[in-house]
Image 1 (cartoon, rainbow, N blue to C red):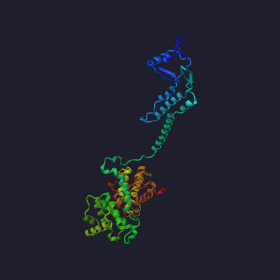
Image 2 (cartoon, rainbow, N blue to C red):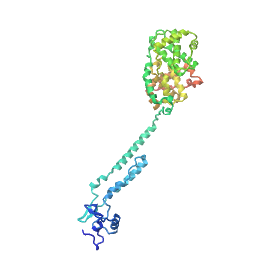
Image 3 (cartoon, rainbow, N blue to C red):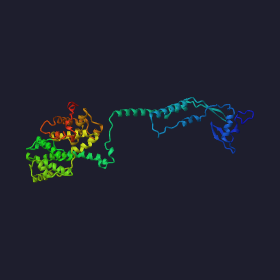
Length: 434
């Protein structure tokens, strides 16, 4: 190929490339020279002259790779939504179609070689662009969004789980930091406070009916003395634990009950009833010395162990999980106090009694079975596990106030306790069978 020819102005000779770019092996490299022309001058000269005879006026080969560089990356800091993902998919599809268009050959001249044509439509060259990686990622992203929306729709149908301690984080009395550890300990310790459900068989002079009469009377005494709720549950626990290991004649059974309430009051109350008041309530059947002697006997028999979880401990936690109102709370306590009188309910753990009382009260108020996911989580009891105990509570509710043991029914028939005893029992639970 000849150099620059004045008669042939369309030919680009070495004079145009001197000190600038020189074609070598299909690539443009910088030529060594002192007098280098500005690239803008060379481009202007190239644009102004007719095309080189053997060159084809097509896109340079480098533009093929430049297409991928022009595709904007997906901004990971931006939240991925279906609308945004669809827009990205459309853009990627347009770029893919442009890449798949046939690109004609590009010829590069060399002063010492003939014009060489490089065909970029070769299948081997374009196979990498059939399905670009970013398109695959976009399609996978769309599929993931579809799957997540389906899961969210399923979750919307389910009842949400509630963190019952979330609003008490700033309340130091709620001890949110270790409340879960406390109740794990209570669940382990509740077994040590339970008594054999058939311990009354070892007593030769008293029976379960006498026990029921005693506790029903103590519920009335507790109400008249206006003692704390914890005191009543601890009193019943002390009576059962003492009778399970100590023989008692029936004449001393009431003394055991009065003394157990005195011990529970000393443990729970701020202002403890005096011994004379307890003697007066028991119609002066016992002297002060007899009460104090029984107190010594009971506290030594129980080895001074009064720190045991009663149903009341679990009631407070489980009522919070049930997001209860005052009506549900009063009806739940009515249910569980009915169970205190019944000897046969000793076979159930305190935590299960508390959970079943709340479940039964909810069913009575709603007229249908209801046990939320939050209640199941915090009580660790399912609806099926509570059903046997709940059915027994319904029967106690039905016969409340009909027999001789009416202390609980009269207590919860007052305005102070919201007339909870007047509510209708959940009799449909007796008909349900699983």
